[in-house]
Length: 390
Image 1 (cartoon, rainbow, N blue to C red):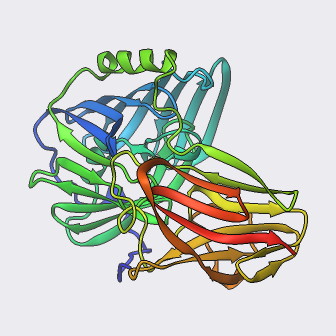
Image 2 (tube, rainbow, N blue to C red):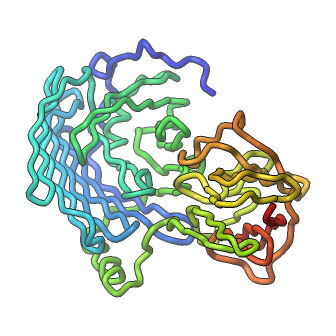
């Protein structure tokens, strides 16, 4: 996608650092369709970045971080605290990490379970926080931290691999950042997509576009506000059972064909006032048909789907919606993989589906087995295919 990845990689400490902008205070609001899913506020000086992040999925979690910076902008020490306010199944966490030229010393306390480690790390390591839990692990990345990091990137169009230290664990993994222009930087999203960061002339992040990622979130810069205070009503909603919950809950749909059980497991994303077909669901491209892990169908007796016979077993299901309005169901012999790991070499068949329209928009994506049909429905569409015992 990008032609000149500099895998010889300019180590960040050797890069000519852009001067820090004036001391600043700012905040970011992150949305997923109609829903606000994260807040971040931060202050930054030449020697320190401090911020608070609230994440609402699956329940409200408040995080606080402090980065201590050397004169060249490199991080020498950071602390991170996570406090679940409306997510009782998540433990609180306190992390302290010291960075030297070639090592990191991490002290991680998770609900009283303490682990101290020392790890070698490449020069130029920088902490990063990718927030979210469970299947929404990549829901939000700290833009206050990204902004400090961007001052380490080369000024020309180039790709830099950063030894990124996970602020919640102290572990380091490489991540790539591509400066496409003075005002646009792309951040690697699990090596499957890019988050597009729009900057102003001084290097301050104005927005983050995650539409190409699996999370589909949008972030925008706003005036500084008290995130901890703003988190309180959302935590109250969680405790009242009115929080957002999981972004795309996992569903096990059970049906019967000729008296034999058929089970489909899938992740169910929500519409959230977004345009679905042709936007969230791409056209003329294989779609994962749900969220999270790949959608799987399981049956113990041979079935006929469309006109194709399948032996008893487990298969993954995918779809191929087309610009002409037609849709193919793809049955693939692989199963158990994540929904972004489609491998067409394992396709068994593509089956044309009947395309229909729902009378009312449907908020939750759904798959069902009923009346000798397999149906896939969401928003205003319903796609069906006959299913019967062999």
